[in-house]
Amino acid sequence: MSKYELDVVVDGFHYLEGPRWYKNALWFVDFYTKGVYRVNDEGVAEKIVHVEQQPSGLGWLPDGRMLVVSMKDRKVLCLEDNGELVVHADIWKHCEGHANDMVVAPNGNAYVGNFGFDLMGGADHKHTGLVLVRPDGTSQVVAEGLAFPNGMVISADEKTLIVNELFGNKVSQFDINKDGTLGEKRDFANFGELGDEPNLGARIENASILPDGLALDSEGAVWIADTLNQRAVRIKEGGEILETVDTAPDGIFAVALGGQDGKTLFMCAAPDWNEASRTAETKGRMLSTPVKVGHAGTP
Image (cartoon, rainbow, N blue to C red; front, side):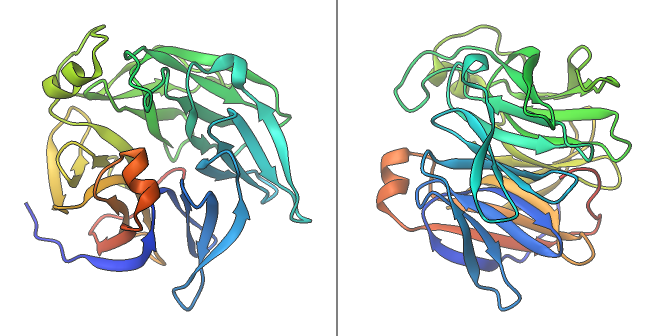
């Protein structure tokens, strides 16, 4: 395993998520300042837009308009060219918990995950699905039976969607059909089946990895934010861990590959994901480290 030197990109935030490298800049959200941010050329994070019901996944339509998930009201919002934030899609009926991460394909199709249950309220774990939001704002469920679908990427050939199952101890993948729907789920990396166990504590205790954020590289491996073990790991299809970036005592909750050459790994770090603690404290920060294999696919 390689030893990585960590740099702090920005700090003083609550809980960062959704890192994306877009048009030569790093973008991310902070759940609890309710902001979408872009890091400018001076290294300062500028707030681009406020999302009152808590922002999460980011992406861009082919015409350059930004989409952002509004978590608590389960909507996908669009930042228009005039700066107005409008509803792109209301996906409430498709979600059993907060809407969460999202990947937007080059053709404008967006895939959105959701919690599946009341995570912060201590409810039992339930499996849930992925929602396809088309460029015209229409939506449908295109996959079911996922254990808290979280970070997602689309392969460079736009034929495969890879998704982390946070409480499933696995990374899954789907063929993308020509109409944007998804084929049958199959494993990308499976670290042990957890079944239908409803007790979240038991699921976590029996897991060896909690895969949150996801990034794809040009060798077909993925970087994963492993929230269980305070690290980012690079994993090849089949489950072999190729590289590990240890970040203790901070946990890592999302990752992205970017930088001018695509060989900087950005990591959203915080002490934990406890809502009360992260709202009260400003210990969230963005870390980075250089890696050898560059970015591929979307985002």
